[in-house]
Length: 220
Image (cartoon, rainbow, N blue to C red; front, side, top):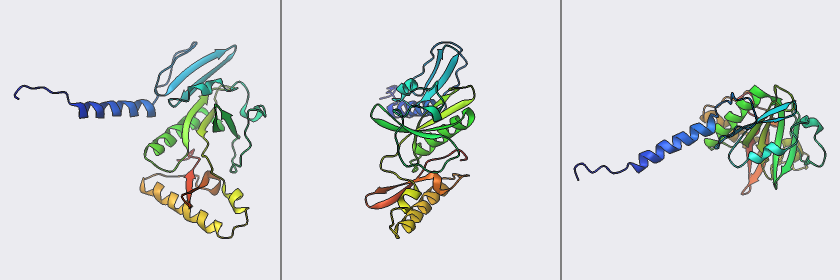
């Protein structure tokens, strides 16, 4: 009918989706000094405990990561916090922890590098590329300028050295084939991977095939 103004539900849904993506990908920096600041979507929280201040940026549903022992350097975390799992060669301190029935990989680095890698991994996962899931960054802990990037452990995945040590002569070719597929997919999406190495890939069997996943996007 003339003059009938029906709500544009499709347009409204599209706009809401774009707002959600912007909120998720670009958490605004917090300039407030003080006790607690929280925004839902990504969470930015500042906590003061004596002389210590830290900032946590976490994906929705991962806010409880704040309560891990961030006042201690990652390389000194207690053994009862650490999970022993095979990992690739890295120049960074990397630890696996179990928290609330989930396993996470934690990498100690600098604030700028951690925030950048977090955003890159989130964007690549949004584009359905085979990468690990970044769930948070803890900045200025235990010291100003220090940071820890948190990714969710990729279940049933293994580094190349562990797989090649199992004595299966056909496995090397399968690992290389899966690695080539990963590189092609990144190339087709216009991704530059500046630190492409076997140590930055995890492999996992998927329905009988071998799949390769990018686990380090620091130079991407």
